[in-house]
Amino acid sequence: RIVHVNGTYVPEEEARVSVFDRGFLMADGVYEVTSVLGGKLVDFPGHLARLRRSLAELDMASPATDDDLLAIHRELVARNGITDGMVYLQVTRGAPPDRDFAYPNPPVPPTLVLFTQSKPGLADSPMAKTGMTVVSIPDQRWARRDIKTVQLLYPSMGKMMAKAQGADDAWMVEDGVVTEGTSNNAYIVKGNAIITRDLGPHILSGITRAAVLRFARESQMQVEERPFTIEEALTADEAFVTSATTFVMPVVRLDGQPIGAGRPGPVAARLREIYLEESRKAAV
Ligand code: PMP
Image (cartoon, rainbow, N blue to C red):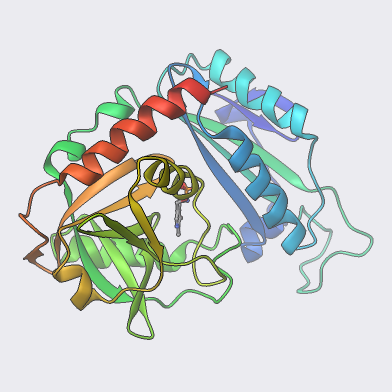
């Protein structure tokens, strides 16, 4: 695989990042994951805009212009022959000469790393047919989940807690209400209404979420951006999650109990179809 590190394209075995990099030492970095469908980038402007916001919130320098970042994404997709898959991008505050909690002053250049993962048939995941299962766990992440940082230890632990219970993923609960999944936004459906947590520091503003809510509104569905409890989810007609790599994925069991009919529901199926169709059209 050819990867990108700080302006150069190299085979993955030759890629190097300093042991003093603050991303490695302190999780002082942000990232984005963009799906590739048919060799094109899905929702790219949204991912770029969120990256800019994450960098700004952390006073982190920009590693490259928007045009350059798009060009690097495209170059990696082409060089690695990706038809369906994803591009991972990470920016860190760089590698100062000494380990110190304070940000380096003067600043050092940010570290920019991108790589691809090929996932043939990404849009035809069998899980979209069967649905996934989730369990609830406490949300023990930090309080700025709106910034897409590389501090992914608790979400990783959450995924392991889910696996230990035989489930696919976890929905995190804080103050009695669901925030989001370990790597996705969480939704329930009641009648014609789609309910998902309102935006704020407590969740990541999903790029897929924004598109799916737009399509839902355009299809005359009612969208309620508000907190919901596990109890309310257990009485919902349907549930699903969204993310750049899973698109819209039905959730059929929560804490061992079926949601609705315990099968993927029509609203999730319809939204998945619209999302895939529209995002393929808009892909760059
Ligand atoms: N919430 C969290 C915690 C996530 O990690 C992700 C995926 N990165 C999402 C939501 C979904 O965001 P997106 O649709 O932009 O992939």
